[in-house]
Each structure stands twice: as C-alpha cells, then as structure tokens.
Length: 346
Image 1 (cartoon, helix red, strand yellow):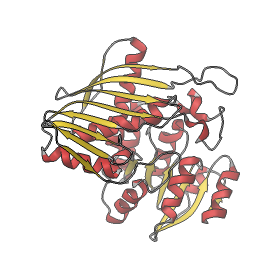
Image 2 (cartoon, one colour):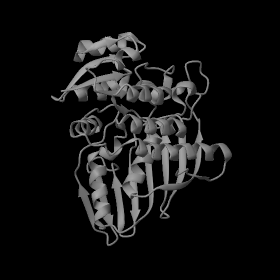
Image 3 (cartoon, rainbow, N blue to C red):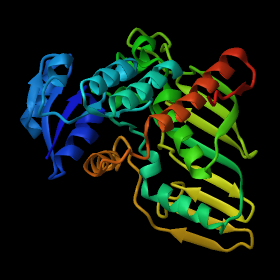
Image 4 (cartoon, rainbow, N blue to C red):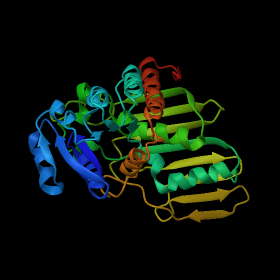
C-alpha cells in the first residue's frame, strides 16, 4: 500500500489527484496540506485522511511514500525540492517551475536523493494522442510537414477553487504566467512528443487582450498566446493558447503530413480523422479528452503509481517537463523582444 500526501487542495486536487488516488486499491490517502485549512478538511470528509497544518508536518510523516504538489506555480519547485529531500517520490503539476534554473534544481535534487520526479503533463496520455502517435510512427502518413495545435477555453476563473476574478491564476506573483503556462505548456509537451522532435526556434505574441481582475484592471498575466514553432528537422507549426474562447473549448491538433492530414480532437464524434492524399477518409474512435466540465481519469495518477510500484522512472520525468518549459520561456522572450528566439536546449 502506497501512502500518499497531497500538497495544495485546489481544483486539480479535488477533481483529479485525490479521487484518482482514492480509486486505486494500492494507494492510501494519508492526508493533505493547504494554507486554507477548510479545503483540506473538505477532502478528509469526502475521501478520508487527515489535515496537516504545515508542509513540514506532512513531509515528516513516515507513512507518506509519495506526494502530489498541486499548488500555485511559484511553489512547485520549492515544495517539490523539499519533498524530494524528505525522501518522498514527487508528482508535480505543470508548469514544473517558473524558470529553467528552478527546474534544473528539481531535476538535480531528484537525482541526488535517488527519488524520481514526475510532471503532470496529461495530454500525451489521452487515448487519441497515443493512437495518433502510433499512426505517425507507422509511416502511414509519411513525414509531418506542418502542424496546428490549440488549447483554449473561457478562462480559469470558473474552474479555480477560488471561483472568481481574484483567482491566483491572474496574479503574476503566484502564477508567473497566464494562458501560456496553464494551457500552452500542455501543447509544447504534446507537440514535441507527437512529432518526436525538439522545438528549436519560436516567434510569439504573448499578451493580455480581454481578461480583468476583481478590480476591473487587466490581469497581470497573459490571456492569449499565438506562437510559431520550428523543429530541429524543419517542421513548422502554430501553437495557440487562450483564456478568451468564450464559446466552445478547442483542444485540437492538426498534423499536415506528406501523405495526408490527421485531425485530433477536432471532430466531436471521431477523435481522430484522417484524410489521405488520394482522398480516402479514415475515422478512429478513441477516448475523450478531459475538459473542466467533463472529468474522467487523466492517466497521470496511474502512470505515477505504476512507476512507484515498478520502481521505474516515469516517462514524463523532470527532463520532459523542462523541455516543455523551455519552449514556453522562449515564447515569452520572443514576445518581450519582438524577435524570433532560439529555445535553450542545454
């Protein structure tokens, strides 16, 4: 039985981490820490476990083998590092850190402590994305030439446990970055994984167009990002992240290949739609992708726990999280300077 501690009791814990751990017979929720004690208390009433009054108290509990770090972004690195040093295995939400240096410190600490670190990038675990990669690897569609990947919805203020425009998502000190970090980092991880290539150069606009905080002032972070990406092999594509899609959510990816086009999560009835060069159409049924309104198993907890049981470093480790973060940071730099920016690949 694996003892689990959860740090941060916001929506991602309420809807995903806590219930997904609870659903597994090989896990036991030992307890939770959140500076707003009432949030932790609500989870104990629903799923069991106890309330910890501080981070140190949780990390010193010998019944806890592994922790989920589900806090505002600024705490991801310091809390993950503290947990690793306390001998815990760590699953940290994305983006893994607010800088490359912080991310490197997380990776180094995991290595020095002999504990693994996993980052909660769930898009590559979605059934249609897994199937899409298999199709790409088969060579059926030839080479990927260009792509378009998008993740947009109406914003986090209705999803956040704070439920309103005062949410931490809108505050630079806590979030560091807006839609590009909340949604765009999902797609930077997904696209490099799908095309099996690294993004080496970007040109981006990362800005605030519409969102306001509880004082009716523009939010401190971006609500939109439109980015042009170039891979090492010369694949070109666009990535859009938005908190101002006030109609239907868009979480689609389209890959334009030398032998046809693949659309993923673009057709509501068939998660994968292929149109070949000769006009032939192929439709694949696969599992739905999670949305804020439709919650189901993300695959993240299963991958993490299975890695713990098997003693095997998870696929989505700190290095993978850093690679996705570096693309985001390059997009921020490009937006700041107005120039194309090389992605730091150290």
